[in-house]
Length: 399
Ligand SMILES: Cc1cc2nc3c(=O)[nH]c(=O)nc-3n(C[C@H](O)[C@H](O)[C@H](O)COP(=O)(O)O)c2cc1C
Image 1 (cartoon, rainbow, N blue to C red):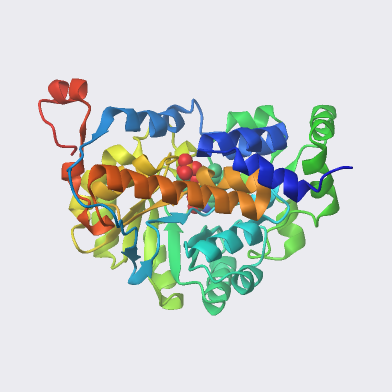
Image 2: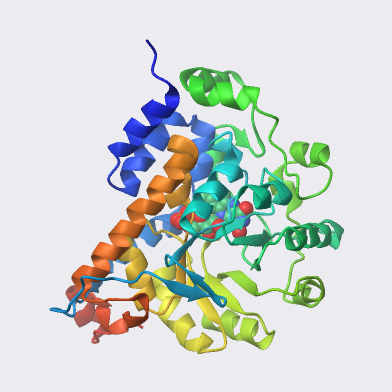
């Protein structure tokens, strides 16, 4: 007798002890185009690699022995107490990875109390997401030429109870993602060619779901039919600037964070404009190539932000140790992109839940081994440059 796919999914997850284990399952389930969209980076993918390599140069410094029988993972972001010090990054077209897309992610986030950033390029309406989950929801804003659609999307998200707005500043044009091109993917739909057809045949579970689910579209921006046909790369028009904050402020009375900050000057500008926070992000290495790893620029941005802005960070985080490193260097919370998408692709809602649990356990264990009993207790003295890099730089502190 064939076992139901949910049982097989649970068995798969039970053998996944790290995000990378989950990623291996995701890679097996996805056809080439979807996998390229998930994992690829911009141009030569230097930044994509740098996001991971940067953690190798950092060391954790335990402050032991301490009574760590209780470790408190709670943090406060934008005035809201959160049970875990991370959130899920906004992602376009999650239904490429699993037919339940945003709904699966939002339900998993809701169960864990983890905030979920929903992209302008979501493939599910903001209203449907809000009714299916009690996760704190954040709306990520992309703007194209005519601001009308953006205004409408903002108002719909706010009316649906979205709490914060993430204003993306790193995507005025879309980068060249060569893996996607080689795999014949021109979002939002795969090319219909012989290689993509054969690839679909080799991934029957994904293909069956893809073909029997409603066509992928972007119901939060404009009429569903026109947005489903237009190529994403043609929608970005390059006109977004800090000036846009003025009209956004008029429509959005909740907190606003700039997403894609990589330099202290951008943080200062965000503070000047009265924003509430910044997300230090290089878009997971998917936009401008050769920009620094976010963990490397985080301390200077935290310093520039002072107590005027909350600083969050994403790009490259796959381990609890890495999240703790960012918290120690001053981030309020870490956002996870691919680290939740692997779970979504591997097993839908249960997969995302598994990834959240894996990372929560790793964070708790890391903090206990470090001698940090609460997120509040973490500070830069828990992190230093690796000894070889220390002597090269002539200092021990990360700055
Ligand atoms: C498949 C995919 C789609 C993404 N789509 C968006 C998007 O629509 N809007 C956005 O602001 N960021 C988007 N991002 C970037 C994420 O929000 C986040 O900054 C990035 O994934 C963090 O890096 P990580 O994947 O290494 O964790 C996307 C990332 C991925 C992997």
